[in-house]
Length: 470
Image (cartoon, rainbow, N blue to C red):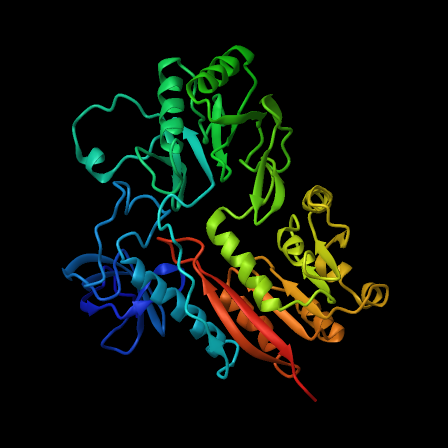
């Protein structure tokens, strides 16, 4: 039997939010429908893009009745830009769906029911909360459907902005963005206009040619800024022309950097970064701790919510000052150093050598002599041999990537058998999977969802597990 083409499902009431921010509904035939381009509560007609035995995936093509939870999007680029997909939903409802997703994952995937869920920790600032933004240059600007239909001749195809979801070679030319505080918009717009006026070539991703490639802006809580330009090739005259103009226009710039990148991707981690002005880094301070942030440093992009996340992690750990703490996936040692001030000793493990170097530098910077850091793949470093050579942990903190922990790492945690495990996660599905492997030995006491990224579906979660009394 041939698949039906152009299948449209009519009068579909969207019931809730699902994974990755799509809305969820039920079809008359009992299948689940995952719908993009609408808000839970909307009544819509859906164009089916994919049909499987148990579900449909589709796009809302007509809104028949609007959800009471709809709000007017703040940004003119909403709907085209992939950054803030929930900007048309009230913040209160965003928090509700984020908390519901975490709870559902912990119960359904983890198999836990008897635990406390503290109310989700919402962000004080729902816009302008990011301290780092990255933009791309392109000589092939993405055109809106209106521009494509129009007969008006386009003056310029140059763009500085975000990649269009699913169209990596096309860049949305940003007129405004509400993710980073000013002068972020002013800096981006100045750079674009100056480049156009002075004939600086925008990158051609298909032919791999041009001059200007990417533009990163980073700031600290003191209002000091770091700017990094990736250039496809060196042209000293053009480079100095641009960098001098930017420095003259924006006195807030604390350090200005550039890198020549002629490789096939925009990743900054293997580039030789040159300092044009300033020290090449910024300092950030959090509750009396100092952190040195370079262009390659991983640091939470929402400063205020990161503070809340670290404070709550420390609160969940419930330290008295006598504990040995293991901090898995320690990164640059931010959580480790929060913990170190109220712990006997902290042992941090991380796979990236540059992060370990930064963690050790931060420990010295903060006068902490009770932190020891080790570098290597977690499942290869965190072994029985390692455990036999180090003091037993009273508390273990883990903050893995989205994929969660390798089963061997979970196995070693169970052998280490700390009294408490505090699991910080950016993916409650993999978190639930991991803690399900620990349920014979540990009770899940409580969880706390934390909203680090308003206007998106992303949510963090902190879970406290305690060893069962046997």
